[in-house]
Image 1: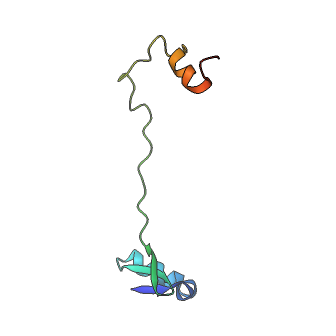
Image 2: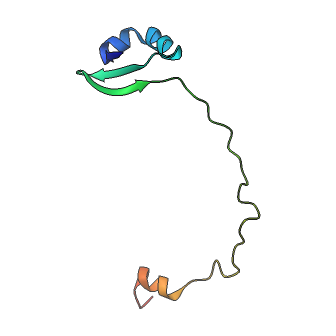
Image 3: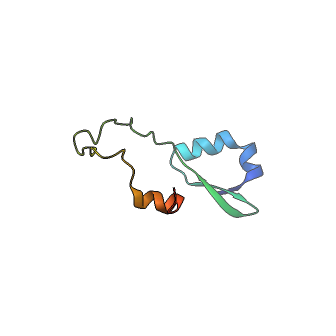
Length: 77
C-alpha cells in the first residue's frame, strides 16, 4: 500500500496497526516512495569486552614516530 504523507498524517494509527500486522506500507511524497513503515525489531544488549585477551598494547604505543611527525608538522618540528 502506498500512502502520501498528508494521508499518512491523518491515518497514522491505522497505518501503524496495518504495518504491525504484516502489511507493507510505503509513505510517499507526490507519489514518489520515500520510506517504508516497518515493525520495530529490538536490538540485543551491547556486549562489552568482546576483545578482552585478544590483543596486547605494545610497550611503545605512546612513543612518537619521527616519520609520522614529519608528515604532520614538516621536517622542522
